[in-house]
Length: 240
Image (tube, rainbow, N blue to C red; front, side, top):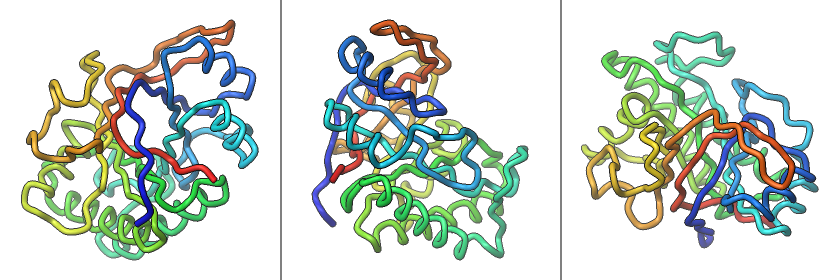
């Protein structure tokens, strides 16, 4: 596996990648040093007219670190209208296909081997054991596909549901788990250690991101964007 690029500091995520003028203004005036971008997945909810290889190169040259996020298939027990769903029958094959697609999307944007790509798994009922198992099988296959191409496999999920299920699997030493965990816990605590909701020994060594607040309308350098707030101490994209 190529060397990781780790960013430690504050990051933001927003549904549609901002234009270059906004990114330049925020780089000069905002407290953020990294931005998450939705690179693909059939369940990605927003169009990305700005998100091209040229955009990636330009914002990275300006000093931004980027956090690629892929909205893969979602759990069979989840209440949503997502068009791509996991099932017990397709979990392994769909996870492998989606993982390969995530790598292809990242590579096309100029995000090289060694990059961490974060799989977005939204909230679901983790009391449903068969659903949990299907999701785990999917995630493991997604991770293996990313690793096979030299990419790190990150995971975004909610501290009381999707991330909790992955942490439970880590506690029993399941194979092929995410290299980094980005957990949503809305406690307004801009930290990745204080208040970490799982066993303290999990995902140590610069492998945690914490989404601690959402839907915050902010203006920097005259440019206004509604963003989510993240404390970050984890791998990001390797550009070039």
